[in-house]
Image (cartoon, rainbow, N blue to C red; front, side):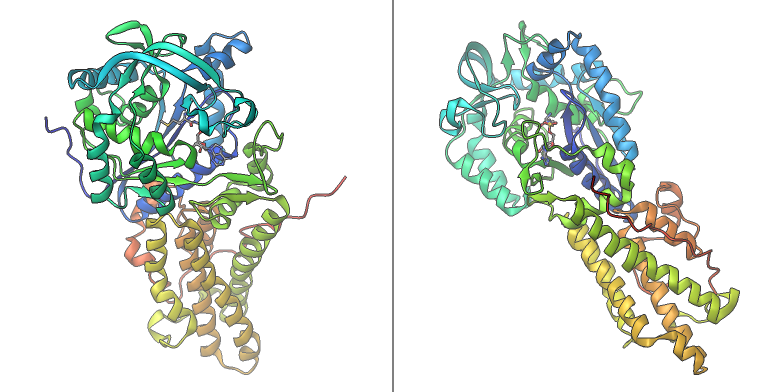
Length: 533
Ligand code: MSP
């Protein structure tokens, strides 16, 4: 069956579908901010983008969380889901689909997919014995466990012994096919260190995994044997597919896969790599479907150097953070300060220092004082020169000419910290340049054309940096573009797409002669250090 009809110019990406056992923490926010920045960058490139996020609502973990509060599981999920949507709005996440695994159309997709795998002969009944971590929703090998049989990820939770009849998926059938696939698609798992982890895991030999549970009610019944409930991960991965359905389309695999499949990028944390990089492709191979293009496993966030977790009581509330500092600040810190793929730390003092240095001082102040100088030295008509009058040896122009390409490559590789860092190099060089050139004294010496050249070069550099940073700090970039006379809100997808191509706006030198500039206003207010009690 020819199910796929995807074009080059589309880009579909996903965040994990978050468990709703509790309100979102900063770890969930982290992946979603990264996904949104990548989606915004792809939209700048002119791609049609589909950003999928959502919630994973079935399984024993959720069943127990609801039970402990004396709630019906569906009611419990319905109460938690809005806290995710609310946080995404606060963080200025422009998601296109929110996939809930409890949606009725999802069940239809799961059934149809199960049927394909069943007909392929890849599902059989067997006995499952082993140690289960409910928080991971995963069986653990005895050798992985910590003292007192605690889970290595949920270190305060003991695993539970299970011995039950389950349905199994024949993962072992796909060993050779998977190995061949990883060889032929070296980019499939990123970064390289995660790819190596997966290759080493697979080379130890793949074992079939159970895809049903008998002691859990909260989930879809196994289509061929309703006494069993489908394993939460089998169900959840497929919600990526369900998310592709147009809102009014009938829930069939053919409809879901028509426009957006295969998904270009799954963004996940390193703890759920195996599910996405091994189980998921094998399930898709079994169902005869093309595989996603890439799985990127990012690192873990720590707080003040310690692993963040409820047991340590050091979780970071993303709602408080964004309400205190604003969405751009939070997005900027996590994307600029942490190398995506590596573990990274949050420390509030460092957070404040970085934002003040980069956004308030280097970027914000530079724009503000330069605009004020334009008013003072050039009058209200703006700067009467164009890019062509600026020599190639102008240091800002020299950096600016290649910056767009560098930043594009960084975003394409999900190296958000690098994208921000190289954009900031132009900003910092501009600060140095204006201080060295001292337009105030050039003006006094009557060197009007030199004054204009300096001011043009600096403003154009701020513009370029704002454009290239817009996937990360869309509100600040919009304020800068506004003050530079473009009247563009980077949060408005239609208007942004009408602004002109990435190729044009990512090049240095597009401010026009006498461009009508807006009123200078601070784009990012300096943060005062919180008072100690
Ligand atoms: N429901 C599954 C995913 C199913 S996808 C079909 C799940 N949910 S989760 O809510 O537990 O985790 C979601 C994501 O949050 C994972 O990618 C995980 O890595 C990430 N994080 C959880 N704690 C984290 C940190 N402290 N730091 C960074 N990310 C972390 O797993």
